[in-house]
Image 1 (cartoon, rainbow, N blue to C red):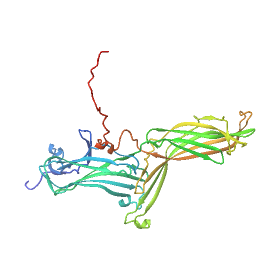
Image 2 (image 1 turned 45 degrees about the horizontal axis):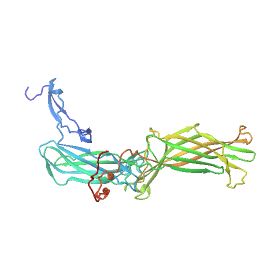
Image 3 (image 1 turned 120 degrees about the vertical axis):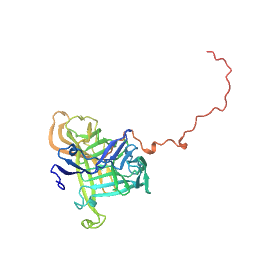
Image 4 (image 1 turned 90 degrees about the vertical axis):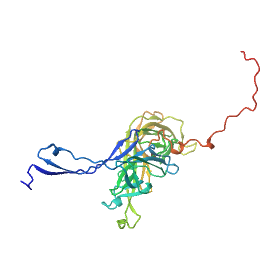
Length: 438
């Protein structure tokens, strides 16, 4: 009948959302990020069980694709913050135009540093939780320009200062960096692309650190040798010597026997949660925050054997005088390997201006017990029942492995002033007229 649609004729509508950002790998092996193309809504008619009803929606390509290509090596800050020369970041923003002539109002690249606290002053306030700061802002396209179809590279570079904190994430806070690219297309929504950046700090190993601790009122003294830096992956050696374990009298002597050695690595995290202007009244004024601290163990072990004990020796006076009635000698030596637990989710040492600081301590605990025996027969040992726990705490520096990398300023070719002097030249050359036969 005219004016009536049969039941087999229905009107359908299919829609799909804008595609996500996806990561791709270039043919040259460099990292890049590409934005997925948008899909366009498509209207169609389905007649009963016609094949047209099963046809998928036709996706229209996005007019512009953005890619970030990082050409520089990994961002590693070599040396301490006071002397580090920074890290060089260089790359390209590739704008791919999929239409014939597209008007672009502007293209920019922004490098941001952010600090996030896991315990903000106000729970649901994003301004209290995250603090942003722009390190770099480059306008790659300042004036409206019509770009033809194809790929258009826009290079950029930046020298990261050496005092910046390394990328880190722990239980209380997180420090990170991200590179944002945006493109303004005429009469269309703004396109934006973000990519996280990892910044590490590597300290060169130096001479081993030697420390001595004494434990009054006893005559015991501990001598410990530790490396200057330790790494999150791998073991490091620890050398221990315990002196003054025997106190000799005229007829008897007392001995300290090592029963157990326990070591651990403590990670201390301190962060300040700032308050935004809206919630500054909760911390008694603007510019203030709440201090949070956390301590956790990232490596530990208990050792009950493996040391060498020497109860002999000529002895030294206990009080420094030659006529003393008691002399102290004997020593215990041992060397063992310590390491950070790879599953402990550790963080390297870091300190930022925002108030986040991560430090580490190496704690060594020695359990010793006292024995008594006569000088004539040292095998008749009698425990006195006295025992002591000797605790030693050392600050250690946890840093990323330096490897074979060098700072960017050491990669440049030598300057004219760096060329060494040439070899000495001959002032006079004469021909040899003698016999050359041997």
